[in-house]
Image 1 (spheres, rainbow, N blue to C red):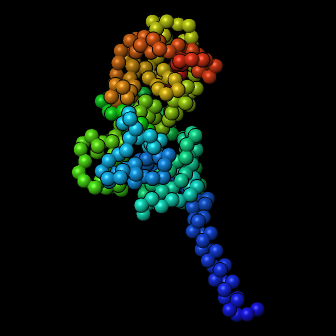
Image 2: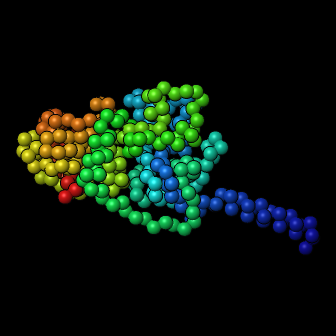
Length: 290
């Protein structure tokens, strides 16, 4: 064979090898969160944290960052599906066995460590009631943040996505996702032990028999930490007379009178024992902490 033809074939093979290596460098690799890690359903992190002017957070008409899914706690395991360049930053397209919902998931590589060996998943331990209540009490007054479950905020977002000018306190809090949504309130309080979204919480734990009962009857049978839940929102029984929730309309995390909360809820929703077999506007109560 002609030596020049041989060299051409060799160069082509090397080029193909480099291409395949570059495009598959994350195949069979995993990422483990080393700090609280924002997880988005979009790879365009720079558009979310900075926007077109570099100093704003694009939100919907309710002021919510709809690209947010949740904040992964340290130790969360991801399988890397692909790597995307976003303004010079490596964004990883991932899947996460501890967060299985109908959404593509993306994380910034700087929040994780990458490894080839699959880590062993260890389910979070259920904290004591004392620890859960300490976190719930600390959350009172926090802002409602869609996809938020880290009320202190992810300060590294200001380091990794530097604003083009000084931010107001309100914008800074939004930038670092300081606050929580309804399911995120308990998700943080239990360090990720409970399900992250209401679509799973409607079947979480055990059902409480509330169908056909009055508000007074329900008030008398619920127990602390029970969840009053439907697809879209969850309210928690704080104690024998108090409820707690993170509500957009109420501005964030608030405690309310338990009986009045049940009464108001029943003005628009019907109590049922099994959410999946019911129809119309309804709610269930799930008992998960015995």
